[in-house]
Image 1 (cartoon, one colour):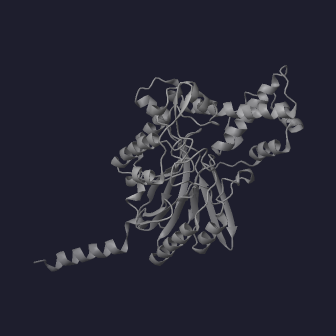
Image 2 (cartoon, one colour):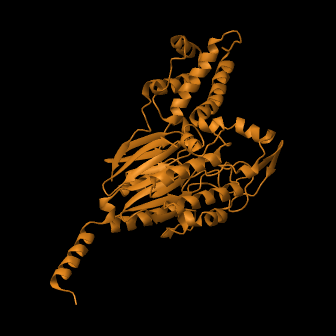
Image 3 (spheres, rainbow, N blue to C red):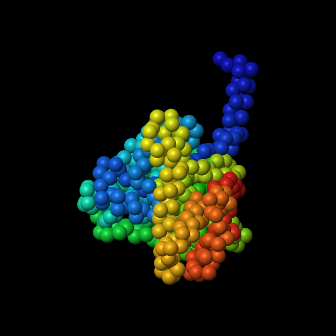
Length: 437
C-alpha cells in the first residue's frame, strides 16, 4: 500500500507531465530536401545517351546522386533530426528503379531514428520520359504510377498518416503533439502510363481543397498548428517563373491559408533557394523554397519548430566531409562544391553566349566576352544559391566595369533586368529566419 509521501510524489509527477507537454518544451528538428532528381546508377552506362542528358541538365548533377544520399545519411546519423521531408521531384523522370533505390536510402535514414515524409513532384508520376540510357540509346523503362508511389513510400509518410485524400496522393500526419504536416500532391498526371513529357504545372484538385479544409478545421478545433508542404509554389517567387511554377489555383489555396491563419508553406520546383512573402487582410504568408538537392550547392533546409515559432536556415550537404571520412579518391567528391559550381556554370555560360549571339554582339576576336560569360555565370550562380553577389569572389575579373558596360549597352531588357535584380537586391535567402505561429 502506498504511503502518503509516495502518493504525493506520484501526484506531483502526474501534474507536472500534464502541465508541461513535450511539444512546448523542446524544438522538433525537421530537415527538408527537394528536387533530388535521382537517377539510379543501374539505369545508365555513362554512354553517349546519358552524357547528352547530363550536358543538357541545366546545372543538375546525375553522376553523384548516390554519393549525395550517402553524405545526407552521414549527416542524419550525426545530427539526428526528428524528421526529413522530401517535397517532390525525387527522380529524374519517374523511373521506377530510381524510386526503389531512394526508398532504400529512406529506410536507412529511418533506421537512424529520423522519420521520412515524401510527396511526389511533377517529374515523378506517370512520366512518359522515364528512360534507361545504354550506349547511344534512350530505352523506355518502367514508370511509377500513382499506386506504385504510395506502395514504394508506404513507410515514408503514407502508413504514418492519420488521414488520406481519396483524390490525390495527399495526406496529413502528426509531426509532434502540437503540429501536423499537410503533405499536398499538386501534380497533374495520368492514373495509367504517361506519354511524352510530364506536365510542369500544378493544381490542387477541388476535392483535395475540400479535404484540406476539413483537416484545417480539425486542427483549429484541436488547437494544433498546420505546416503545409507542396511541390509547386504557393506564392510567385519571380514574375518570370509564375506560369507552370506557382500553383494554377494558388489564389484558392491561399484563401484557405488566410482563413485559418497559416503563416508558412514549404515548396520546391523552381530549384532556387528563395523566400517569398505577402501580406493580405492583416495576415502574413511566407513560402520557403529550399534549393534543388541535385544542383549547386545541394542545400538541406533545416527547421526548428516549437509551439511558438518556426525557425529556418539552409546549409549545403557536406559531401567533402563524407568523402574524406570514407576515403573517396574522386576529385569531384573531395572537391564537391567546386565541381558542382563548375557544372552549373556550364549552362550559365551557354545562356550568356546565346544572349550575345542572338543580340549580334558576339565576336571571336574579343576575349573580354569570355569575361562577360563568366560574370553572367557567377551572377546566375548567386541567384540560384540564394546568396548576395558580393559573397562570391569577383577579384578574377580584370575590368569588371567594362564587362558590366558591355552588358548594359548590348543586352536585351529582360537579360539586363534579371542581372541587375541580383546585383542590387539579392539578400541571403539561406540565412536564418523566424516566423511566429
